[in-house]
Length: 111
Image (cartoon, rainbow, N blue to C red; front, side, top):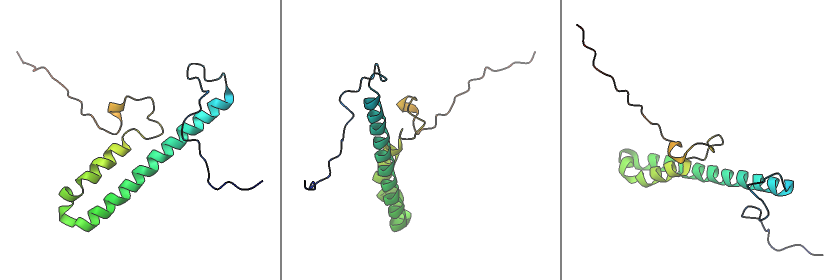
């Protein structure tokens, strides 16, 4: 028995996992959970790499960073949209953006 030449990873979710009945196969449920955690960590680490490139660009470009680093800012904002651990159940349009509330008032007249 020899060693394998390459390491093989499962890149996708398990084939036998049923989202309608997740407790039917406990092994598939745990594999699916591991898959979700692995994908989250990949997204988080990708965002960290883009952030480091953005820091480097800010330092190198100096006063011209607004024009020269714009593409990295857009990549970073897109990479950080919705990757936090507690944001899974929120709609995508609420991930990573701050919405301002508009308060409308009716004029009050004094008689």
